[in-house]
Each structure stands twice: as structure tokens, then as C-alpha cells.
Length: 106
Image 1 (cartoon, rainbow, N blue to C red):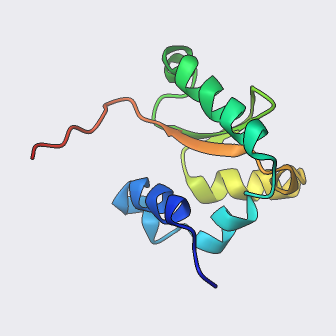
Image 2 (image 1 turned 90 degrees about the vertical axis):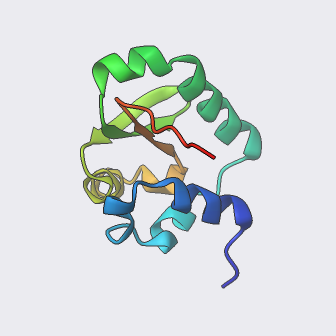
């Protein structure tokens, strides 16, 4: 299966200590939702980052219809919770709320 570039980029953005625990097929399984709904949830994440950081520092969160529907310190726990509640089929946006942003020096 050919993995789309944007998915490869999102996987590469996962902190390395979690990459071995994340199955990229699980990430792909979260995608079948209209583009507009996905981007609205991504916009919600960007626009509310400071509030999300206060509530979920260094946690993975799942956003669906512009609200947080799950959170966990470990991405596989979040994915398991979403699957248990059958929310993974609705394709929530999953993001890491990073307490200390990583800076790159080029």
C-alpha cells in the first residue's frame, strides 16, 4: 500500500520515542472523513492550543467535531480507547500537545 506523503510527514512528526509503538496502518485507519471536517478539527487544535496545553500538557488528544473526545500520555492508549468507544471509525484528528516546543537549528 502506498502511503500518502502527508501521512508519512505526520508519522515523521511523532516524537521518536513513540514511533516504534505506533503502527502507521492505525493512523491510516483514522482518515476516512471529509477533508473539510478534518481541517476544521485541525484548525480547532491550532486556534485553541494554549487552552489545550493547560488541560493536556504532553498528552495525545483526539478531536472530533471541534471537541476533545479522548486523551492519553501514550498514543497507543489513546488509539485503544478510541477503538473501544468505536470513535476511531469517525476519524478524529489525533495530535500531540507538546509542553516544550522543539526548535530546529539549520
